[in-house]
Length: 216
Length: 265
Image 1 (cartoon, rainbow over the protein chains, first blue to last red):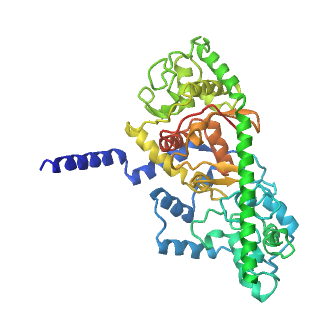
Image 2 (tube, rainbow over the protein chains, first blue to last red):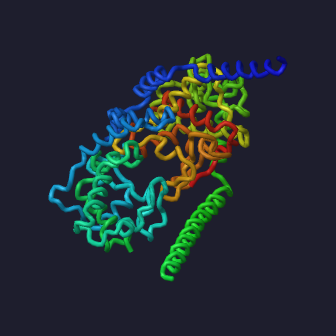
Image 3 (cartoon, rainbow over the protein chains, first blue to last red):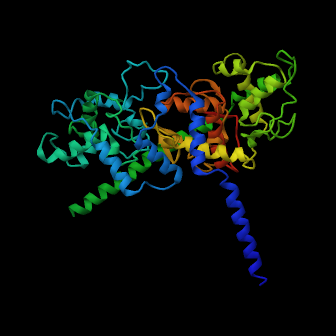
């Protein structure tokens, strides 16, 4: 009996501590967050408050992060299927542009902040998160290394039937990364209009052209 | 034999890759160490102390009776327990919003006017300097942001939701860059703010002097610029969203030693 009492006390303390830390329900916290968000931001330059409106994919992925649990497999699959439908394939059927231009786009992190003009040419932000060419040592590590991207995938001729699957996947990934991974951290570069179709072609060449420094 | 050679080549190149990465890391560490010699933040700190003790504003009063949470007039160790709930305003407040409250109640300044003033201009420059001074009075102390009051716990939950809120053209949340250990943007290390990232890192480093642009940034400005890069609309100065994020980061960073005002690249 003497031994049981301390355990009971510990249990009661844990329950109390639990109550104290969850003093607001998750639904109420969501509601309060929405109110506070609505009152806390203001439009500035091109960055309007409408940017706070989350689409379904962002809403679900954010909620999963708050809960600390990955999305249910069927929810993730539904997001991926919906995002896949948004991908626009190159209008002239050509997937690759100029790798040298692609390097410049990958280097640039400019565009779409409240300091930027609406007509500014956006960068791709690629080096912020990825290693790409060997020459650039100032690269981020949030995304995987893309050095030798095409070479590692056996792309010797991007126009060949053998390369078709890799080329199309890469285009789709750039256009809307979340078609392949529901909550990928990678921006939906084509879908959200960060880069133009022509710019995406140049980034494609940077990754897949056998002549690109990335594949040396 | 060929296979063996290939394996050796792969191993050699990966070792070289590692050495290269280590060189880069070592270079960054050395650069940061050099930055520590002589921190211009001290000039802002001195200016803040003078502002604190000089009679100013329509009421020609000093800030010396300001209650930063540890009672009127207590500056020492107040910073590491902010943001916290204040009964007189009925709000959870961070360092800068609380300084504004005292400027209004003690000195008679116009709150709306200060809130509208741009960063580092007019009285906002004085808020910045006083924030730097108050933070400096908690040097080497451990972050201990309270969760005793219901509103403090609510703000933690709100801050957590804001931290993970993905939106805007890039789908970025705070968490995109600050939810994993040992990640970088370009060469800039990113603190994982979902827990205690370590002494003097993340929440425990701001206000900080930024060498890159020669500016002293308190937390409000730090968050403002994060949101700019996140491609969000602008968070209003001292808004509840910014304070909720402060609570979230501060509570997560419990026991991290504050080095504020720090020096940054």
